Length: 170
Length: 178
Image 1 (cartoon, rainbow over the protein chains, first blue to last red):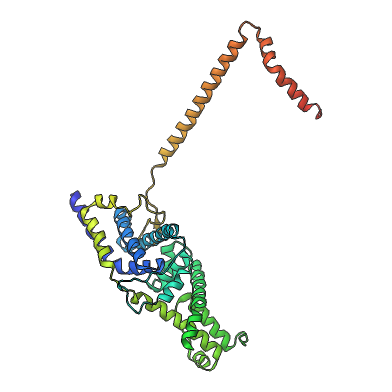
Image 2: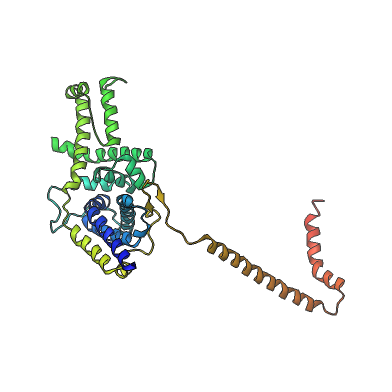
């Protein structure tokens, strides 16, 4: 009886995590700025999520729940990295080329100039295509906060990318 | 400086651009589109925001998913091996962060179960009782020492001997007040 329940639990987790993994990975890359840390964060998220899978109230809440764990894990990974690498956040371009050549590294680097909360908001909006209400739910903040963060982030990104865009036009 | 009047076409374009920066979608009605084509300020602003939105939307697709399968496999392998692998995994911290709680189907956060509060209360009561016991023991010892010191002397004299300096000090302290 217990074994069957455990098997069902694993099966449900595997289905949820396998389905969400690509989106979670992209989100982690957006927040952390490089694929290596994103992969670490994704793995850590998976292990944590399985450990506390019983606390998930309903299967419908699974994606938001996983997103929330991932975001917190990304913050943890970012803090650990900030401690070990005093130069701060940097976009690491993979030498072995497993990232697509058309990856917009300039934008990814500009994202790293945002605060973690702003970056997460932008990533959830554009990488996962969540609505403002959904982002507010995942980040446990009012919708107004999400909007102001989005606005501030976009202004910063515009300012950061405008010189490069002008050079491109000229 | 951009030359526009409040409520004019440039202003309405600016408002649409502001909205786009919040909503992530830029929509311009036909009259404003025509204006944007003519106005160099608006066309530049709109182009900037459109480009940024386009870049943001295309960025996730450009991130190749090469490293995902190994990571997912590792997690799924750990899950297949059961709780031991998860518990011993170095990456997994002992406790999840506070926000890693679950969400109900209604979308409201459901707090993870905390240890029962009565344990905390019992602990506090035990700590206070221990502190009182120690204090009572100390006072008893002190009383016994005092008693030993005044044995053979009448209680009044003994007490005076102990409290005389204190009385003098107190009187000196309040002399100027009275």
